[in-house]
Image (cartoon, rainbow, N blue to C red; front, side, top):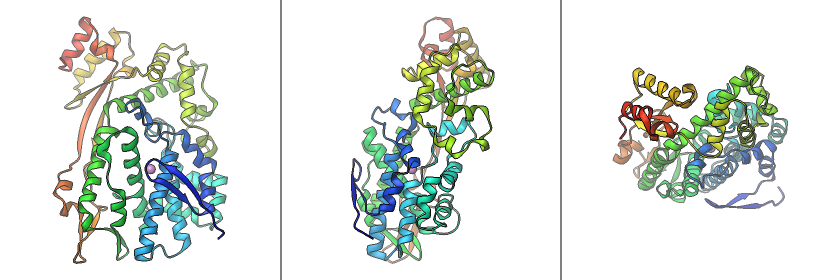
Length: 418
Ligand code: NI
C-alpha cells in the first residue's frame, strides 16, 4: 500500500490518524458526512450550551480509540493478525452510529424507525457505502452488521464496540464531559488502553488498572445522572415529541399547510415503506426548519410549542417520588384547560432509569496477577454499590406552577410544591 496519512485535530484525542485511504473514503461517504448534521447529545445543548458536537465528531473519536486499541493489542498480543480484521474493526467503530436520525430517541419513539434497523439497511443498501465496503470483499458489510447486531462471529471486535468497556462509550464519555464542561466525567483513557489484555480469546483488563476502571465506571454514572438524564434535557425531548405528534396529527387531518417534503414520508405512511434515501435525507436541519415554519402555523398549539422550543421556553421539570395518581393527573389536566392549554400536549411525565453497573452476561473481566480471571464487581466495592435507580419527572409549562391565582395554587397544592 502506498504511503497515506491524514492527521485531524481533535479536542479529546489531540490527533486522529487515518493511515488507510479506504478509511478516508468511508469518512467521506455522504451517509457518514450526514452525521455532521445530527448532534451527538440531541437536545442537551439547551441544558449545556457547549453540547453542539455532532455524531460525526464522536464517530471519528470512536474510530481513533479503536485504532489505538488495535495498535496496543497488536504490539503486545499479535492481534489482529490480518489486515481484513483491522479494517473490519475500524469500520465498525466509524459506522456504529450511522443509523441515528435527528433527535434520535424522540424521533424513533414517534415514527416506526429504529436506529439499529437503519444501521443495517444503510450499511447494506446505501449504494455509495456498500461499494466502498465491497472494495475489501462482498462479505464485509454483512460482517459489520453481524457485529453491530451482536450476532456470532468476531467476538473480540464485538467486545470492542458493544460491551461495558468499548470504544464507543470511552469516546462519548470523554467527549461529552469535555464539551459540556462536566469535569467528573473524565477518566484516564491511555491507562485503560495500556491495561487491555487478551487471554483465551477474551478481552480483559489487567488488575493493576482497577482504580482507573473504577474512575471510568463512576464517570459513566455521573454522566448519566448529571448530563444524559438531566431533567431539562428530558423535558426538551418531551417538547420535540409533542411538536412532532401535533404536526403529524394536523397534517393527516389536512389542517396543516406546511410539511417539509422530507418529513412527509414519515408522517404519511408506515415505516417499512421509508427508503434508505428517504431516511438519509432527514437530519436536524430538516426538523429545525420545520419547527421554524410551524411557528407561523394556524394551529395555536403547534405554533406555541414550536416557539417554545426555538426560543427555549422549555417545560419545567418537577421531580416526584412516583408517578402521579389518577386523581392528580385529572387535577393537572383540568388546570391546564382552565389556563387555555391543551392537556394532551402540555401535561406529561416520564420515568427516567439510571443504570447501575450491569455485569450479567457482559461484565468487565479482570485479569489477576496470578493469571486467574475475575469480574469487576467482585473486585470493587465501589462498583458493587452502583445499583439501578429510577426517577419520575413531570413536565409542565412554567406558567402552570409559577403563576398567580387559584388555578396555579391548586397545581402547587396537588404536587405539594411550596
Ligand atoms: Ni456511539
